Each structure stands twice: as structure tokens, then as C-alpha cells.
Amino acid sequence: MMKKLMILAALTAPALADPQLFVRNQPFAGPVRWFPARTLAPLDGLLESLGCSWQVDQGKLHVKCSTSGQGGPAIKEILPISLEGRTVRLEQHIQQDRIFVDVDQVASALQCSYRKSADGTVDLYGPLLSQGLGQGALRGDSTQPEFPVRLEKVQITQMGGAMRGFARIRHQGQQAFKWVLVRVSVYEKSGRQVARCTELVRELQPGAEAFVQFPKLVGEAQNPVTKVEFEARP
Image (tube, rainbow, N blue to C red; front, side, top):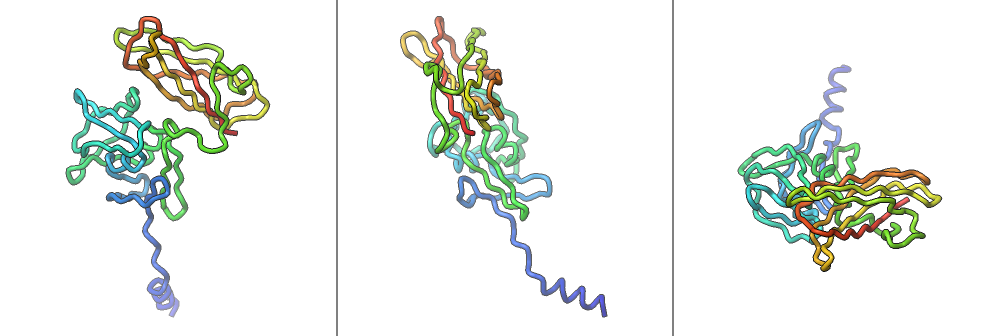
């Protein structure tokens, strides 16, 4: 009798809804492969939904997330990936003549807000690198001595057609910041922009310092001039 009741309960129990992938609060239109430990989706579809653009040049996929949904060609082969001049590593899988990637890895590489619900539903939000920290974030730059985040030092080193460098920042305010976005632009003295990068610092406490290591920046300047901007969110 007990066995019959268990079978009846299984037959009458409501079916669990399939998990869904949402990108920037919209259902993802492309195919999604669900696995216990990962979620795979087409790379080009994810980039377009996140508002990025991309192009293939000299055997490398160059991705920019400072545009708004311009998209790019279909991505059908495994290529090295450059994000805003920085090399990123994603596991790429060819499925049905398309490149699929792990959504978790895309969120990490593009520094997206990411949430996975108990039912398996995944929410992927816009890249912090390009879209900033949103409404309510404090904004300033290194020319404002009263801004809570202060630039202590910035250094650019030439590397034969490329540049590397770092910035050291200090929190001189009273309130802890959960996120600090550091944007660095490099210019020639003529005003021509040579390179730029954006990096994210997590959990910056009052009085604390942080080092921001720049990626390898493509470009060269004889007498580089830097502009450093900040966004900070408690």
C-alpha cells in the first residue's frame, strides 16, 4: 500500500520548471545547455545581449564592451580573446557550428553581476567595466583632492609597441566601499588617446591602499599623459 501511495504522489506532483537564463533582465534568446556544474551558451549571443561589440583581426577576437549592442560576426571558430586590450581565457566548445562558453566564466571575464537562484535560473547583468557601478555610485577623478578615493601614484612603462603599468590608490574617506572602479586613459601630449583600461577593486576599507595592475595596453606614447577616473559604491 505504501509503495502505491509513493508512486501516486510522484505522478501527481507538479513538474519542476526548467531553469532559465536572463541577460540584463531579458530572457536569453539563444540556445542554452544546462549541466549540474555549468551553463553553456553561444559566445556571440551572450556578447550581443550584454551590449558588446567584437571583430576578428589577425587571428584574435577583439571584444569591446564600451559600445551599445553593435554586435559582430558569428563566432564559429576557437580564437584567442582580447577584451578591451586584455587577454582573457574562456573554455570554448564547438557545438552545432557555434562557439559555446561557460556563462560563469563570461561573468568573471567581463566582470558582470551574476546571480544563480535555487531553481537553477541564472541572471547575468551588464559588464561593470563599461557600464559603471550604476545609480548611487560616487564619481570623481584624480584632480579632485576631496574625493574619497585618492590616486597615490600611477606609472606607465613602454614595452616596444605596448605599455604596462599600475596605479596605487588610497581610501581617505570614512565609509567602506564594496566596489571601486578605476578607469585609466593614456594620451599623447597632443590629446590623442593611445590606450585605456578599466579595473575593479573589491572591498576597500577606510585608510586602506590598493594596487591596480594594468593589462598589457596596445599602443605607444613618447610622453604619456594619464587620466584616472573613479566610481565607488558603498
